[in-house]
Length: 393
Image (cartoon, rainbow, N blue to C red; front, top):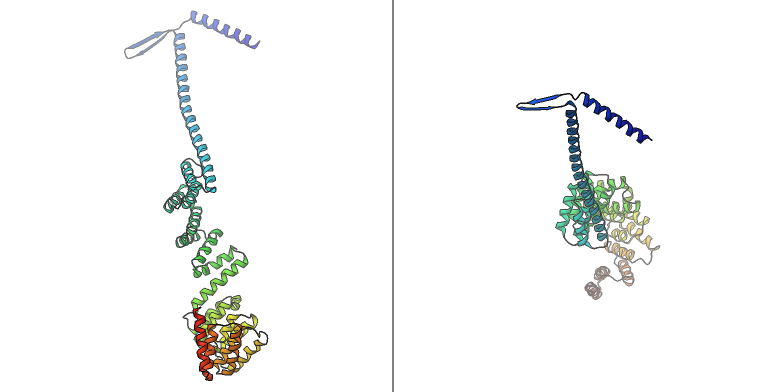
């Protein structure tokens, strides 16, 4: 019904326009230089309408052509991106499967059209190193550094880890030092840094890192304590090796309190004290340490002290014998104390007992000296011969 009404209306308008054109055709004159165009008004209007329609149609065609080109470009770009995504996934899978060459090839083939080229470069660097090509690894890492913003930490950590795996410890340390400078609170950087420093036996670097390791809780308490003990041992020993008496005492006081019970630190400290003739202080510290923690190293160190009260020192050591009668190290220490104090008979008994429990070159040498002092030259020579034979074996 509506269509019929519209059709009737169109017919009526058409009839009316026809009558108007027939009754009053109008006149249009257009001149331009020597050109003259004459036509009726209605034909001119129709020509304008047709011209505008043609112009509009041409514009729409051009827009459509350019739009099609853009859509084609978008389609091709999406196709390249999808292909790059597939290649990246394939390369990562091959990397995990240990197919290094194929992984590297597919990862680098996709790198120009992937949304995350950093991942491709880092994974390709891993593959290149696994193939044994360090120069190509470094080239990928260099390109990764500039392929995206804020990638320095990711690239640096990968580089340091790969250098560590390749036993390039000095290079890995330098890389991690730089990362620690730009990211001082990064826990993984600190953990790798302390690992590399330990492998390099750079205990002074570990020592400098301890406050940060403790502050940011990079290691559990037990691991941190073990690392701290090793670092303090080395740094403390180095600090007192050629130090003056006052410097030795100052370094000891600077140690954390719990390190004052560390056996290696006690040994190093008392050795330094003995070099400066501080036998009384050494004897006191060693006696306290031995009473607190029975240890062979401490016992042997105690025997090296020449106390101003030798009888009291010997009595102290003999007091321990009642508790540890079969301790060979204590027997050796007692023999050496008697040797220092020229108690040849006692020294002989202690050394002979120790020799029966645990024969050693040291005991045979000391016992030989005692026999010489007692005038037993044959026994002394026999001890020296046995000691030499034992040393050769």
